[in-house]
Structure formats: C-alpha cells, structure tokens
Length: 539
Image (cartoon, rainbow, N blue to C red):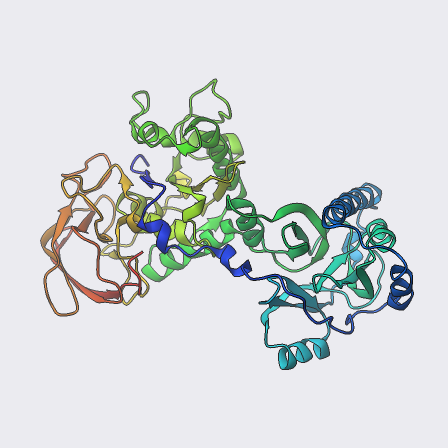
C-alpha cells in the first residue's frame, strides 16, 4: 500500500518537548534514608543476626568501591544463570510450580526506589504506616516455598540507602556478605527459577549508580523505557531470574490499541504475527544504519520519493547497503517468513525526548493523520506486526507498524458498510494532525503551521463515495474551517471510497465536536451525524 508514509518530527526542540510527560520523572526524588521493613514474607532461614555481627567488625567500602562490587555481583548473577541454563535438563522447567503468590510492589517517594514483598501482612503494614510508600500493585508471581527446579531469592537491606536488594545468585550473595557490610541479609524473599521455561518470564534488572540501588521489572515497556531515554541513568544488567507472569511490551500495547480502535469502528480485528514483528525489527535496524544524519533523522532523505519504486524512501531499502532485507515492506515480510504481497507499513520516527510513557503516542500519532490512518484502518487487513527500535545512543527511536494481509484471503466489507474516524462518541481525541508532528506527504501544504486532527469517512474501498456536504462544527455550532481531501487530490494515496476533512488549525482541547455528512454510498443516499470529544490538552 503505497500511501503508507510516516509521522514526522521536524524539530527536536519545540513546544512538544515542553508538554510531553516523560515516564522517568516517576523516579525523581531526593535520596533519603528509609525504615527497614521487617520480615521477608518468604521461607528459608534468616542469617541476618550472624551477618550483622560479622559486618560490624568490617569497614564499609567507599561509594566507588561499593559500585564496583555491585557490578561484579551482577556479572556473577548473569554467569550463574548461564551455567544453570547450560545444565538444564529437557522438560525440567515444565514441572515447576504452577501455583504462585503475587509479589507486591511499592514506590518509595523519599528514596525513588521500589520495594517488593509477597507478605500480605507486610503489605498491609506498609500501606497503613508508611505514607511515603506508594502502592503499585502486584508486579509478578513467584513460589512462596521451595520446589523442584526453583531456587531461593535472597533479600538484603542496605542500611546506608534504606533500599532493599534481591538476588538469586549464591555467588553474588556470598560476595555481598563478604565485601559489603552495609548490606544486611534479611533472609529468603521467595523462590524463582534460574532458567527460562514454559509459563515463566524474565525479571529484568537495572542499577542506578547515582543512588546506589536496583530496580526489577517483568515489563518490557519499563525495560525499554529505561533503555530508551537518552538521559536515563539506569544501567541495564540483564535478566535477574525467571518468575511467573505476563510481561507487557510496546509491541503488544500497540497491537491492542490498534485492535481496540478497529473493533469499535467496525474495521475488523487483526491477528498478531511474529514474522511481521521480525520484518518491522529488520527495517528498524536498517533505518538506524542508513536514515540518520549524524544523531538526527535525515528527514529530507526519508521524505523523498524513491524513483525506482515510487515509494517514499523511508519505506524502501537498497540492496548492498547495511541491514538490507528487502526493497519494499512486502519483500521484507517475505524474507522474514510471511508470504504476502500486501503490507500497509506505517512509520513514525521519533526523538526519545518526545516519547510518552506508557508508549501509546505512536499509534495515536499515526491515527491522527490522513495517509497513515488509511494504512491502519483498511478493512481488508488481517494480521499485524510492529516494533519500537531504539538507537544505541538512545537519541532516536522509530516506531514501525506492519499491518498486512494475504490477497487470497482479503476481507471485504459488506454492501453499505460505512466507517468513520474519530469514532462516534470517542473521547481523548488528539487535537492536531499527527499530534503536531506533521505527515509526509503533507496532506495540506497550502496551510502552514499546526493543523487539526483530520475527520475521515470510508465506504467499501472501490465503491464511489459522492459528497454533497461534509462539515465539522464545534460545541457552539460554529463551522470549523477545513479542507476536503478526496481521490482527486491524492490519486496515488486515496481511493474513491473515502474522504477526509483537515482542519486548518488545531481543534480546541476538551471540546465536543459534531460531524455532518450527506452524500451517496455507491449511489445509495447516505446521511451520517456523529460526535467526539478532544483530550484535555493541546498536545
């Protein structure tokens, strides 16, 4: 689908930068001492008394020495997991505990650290007596008792920072007990696995050297966010161990968001396809290698039309260049294992400073457009893959969505079908075209500055939509100044079965708008009125 284009950010420093919420702000806070929480909530012996007695006779290392020892401990943990994986007997993991208990997560607003416990009593104590501990809810699931194939996870309390540390590694535990007397062993927190297996998910581990504590999560969203932001001080230490639970991801979030819109609007739901995920990742890698100008995106290059294919360069690859896997999206999908010749690729190159968390901004940007919206809402699509690819310097990222179909199975709407976007009674609708980032090609080059979020109406793709009137009015009934776009304006990108209104200025925040359309749906009279409400902020 050659009308697949991209959302463009034309400036790194803009008002958009001032208004976007960065998730890492959650971790902001002064480093302060906290109370040591009693009890681990898990089984196993408590050697804290013996450890404290031993530690009292030894000098606490400097901050630099402590950091070096903790880094060594992380290496020991990683090596121990690798050794366990190499010794794993086939099928052993599948016999692990199928019944677990939740690990409750708290955010300490004084230290900016997180605390984890399986103890219901300890959770209640924290909630009732420590108001600076913000309850995040269940984080993942573990076993409260020792079972075949599982290992104890030890819990330490750092008496200097007031933060807890968790490890499954016996060698790391020994290193800390021998070298870091400020760490008090509180016992076994719970039991987890050193090796991956069915029903298990990795627990990712980060270290924040500026504050001297660790962060643990099964969320790939949180993992990728900490790796993504250029100013993130969190160092990724890899997989800590394996627990029970479903780790989310940017890709799953985008898939669910697109499907929610398609389902509510009657466009049909998509199936997730791992081969399309792979094709998206491959092209993301290619873009990082070939479509940057220094640290920045090479927008002039990506916005040009490739003379050999007629596609925007951002969607093409050149044979013989680094990272090449296929000239066009369908070629790359086939190379990844998906047999098709129809891929509606849409791309949104981003700068890490401008990315929201949770990362729903990509789909929102792409749907708040004309040509990208078409690529995501085409009725005949059946499967979906995506990626959020971050540069090694964490300065830029690209969001690539690969909705596709196999032509022999192409779905077609029923006679008389009508789809619209924004959806009837939809709320939290973006106010601007591509959230202020623009679109290539520009659907309304005659109007400069920020434009409003377009209004779209669709019938069956190759039927003829005749327009008698198509207008947008605000809450007071005033007519909004718009430009109508049809196939006559962009014959290479639009079809006879669709029309779009592009407002000349951003829509007003927190405002209910009403759309009025009259015309013919392939010769049959069509009249439709619907309303939607914009979000509370301009960006």
